[in-house]
Image 1 (cartoon, rainbow, N blue to C red):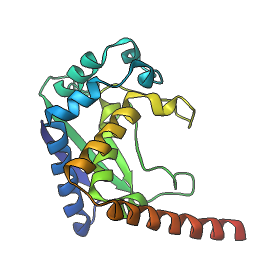
Image 2 (cartoon, rainbow, N blue to C red):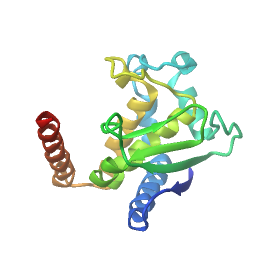
Image 3 (tube, helix red, strand yellow):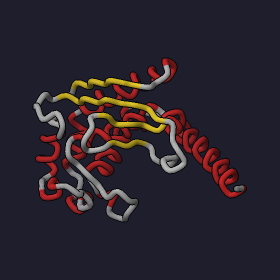
Length: 194
């Protein structure tokens, strides 16, 4: 699949990570084995989908994703069109990795997580938010069923496959988790002192 990414509000130094994430998206979404794995996701693991797609088969879902026919750009072009902005989080959105809305073409990524995550996790988040643009939805709040939506379940498969494809060392993945846990501890300390 062809990947088209338009960026806004990124610093010049942040663009190389977007380029790597874009290439990761292209490699994974062009790989037949990735789609084969997605086609084998058991039905009950997609039962948390909150759109009409909950009644569709995996093959129908995959066919729709490959078509590139987004809700706001319904033409079938077999391309991934991502309009990406970066945002500095407010207190309320400090734990939001990425977000989008149904009535705009933009998706946004939190600068905090953008700086902490490697390019594969950035690509995974871009894929997740783009799936919303394709018409897939999950619960707004963090419910038990949320992880069983197309967005989360396909993102999980994307990340597993991408890490295998790039043969990332476990230590590289663990390093990102260490950074996140360090900053979450700092945040807890700062928050509880008030």
